[in-house]
Amino acid sequence: MLYVGGKWVEEGEVAVHPEDRGYNFGDGIYEVVRIYKGKMYQWDAHLTRLFRSAREIKMELPWSAEELSSLAHQLMEKNNITENDDATLYLQVSRGVSPRVHDIPAAGSIEPVIMAFVRTKARPVADMKKGQTAQLVEDIRWLRCDIKTLNLLGAVLVKQYAKDAGAQDSILHRNGIVTECSSANLFAVKNGALYTHPADHLILHGITRQVVIDLARENGIAVNEEAFTTDFLKEADEVFLTSTTAEIMPLISVDGQPVGKGTVGPVSLKLQDLFEQHINANVLV
Ligand code: PMP
Image (tube, rainbow, N blue to C red):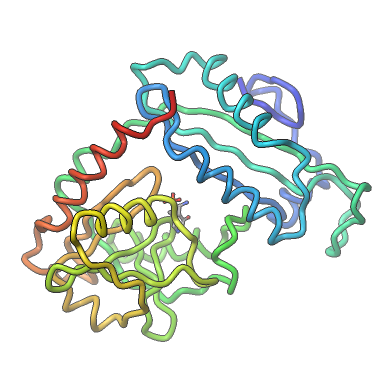
């Protein structure tokens, strides 16, 4: 069962209005939330980011945090997500339906359309152990990557460029400065310290990114939130990406060249271990 525009519906019954602005323009926002063993992880952080994204696109959400939490729990219940399930919850809000013009309809004349579903999804355990490959790709996205917008064509294309080059994921750069990946944040490890792009308008302020930064600092691993070049990346001892679904995913080769020794390195392993403990201690009851 899905929740669409205030109604519970089965998948085959969903109809998108032809002039839904999410559908026409990608004019809307979304979140993907991890569910571990039937319980949500970092739900509050996702809600905070959803409300921030809404503010940044001048959209007022008519639901309270409590209403959205209740919706999330109902979704899990109606879809029989239990303590045996790892899953994801997808929640999107389109600005709503109005005649197709670019400018934003006046407040009160349009109602946001919410859509949410859950799907079981296993953790990428094998890849986290073995690592993945990545390809450097020019970051062709817009200049507000901090907003979690439905408009993902830039992300779609850069991911495909990397796949076409034979890699599993893309590492994006703007004029030689590494930003993030198509759907994840990026960290490099050099001499035991972490480096990652500052949380400005050029990257999504990833929730997993922040958890990793906090865990690293609490455990004596230095973190530098500063921009670095593709040359620095290629000289890194270890590289990994972070996201809600990929967790801490080591990248063991970039552009066909091994990163460090070409295997999952000790700092990545340590952080994976700390992250595992964090999940177990922090899922919502
Ligand atoms: N950057 C981009 C572009 C993303 O799409 C995502 C995934 N939502 C992330 C980073 C990682 O964010 P999070 O850890 O909150 O999933």
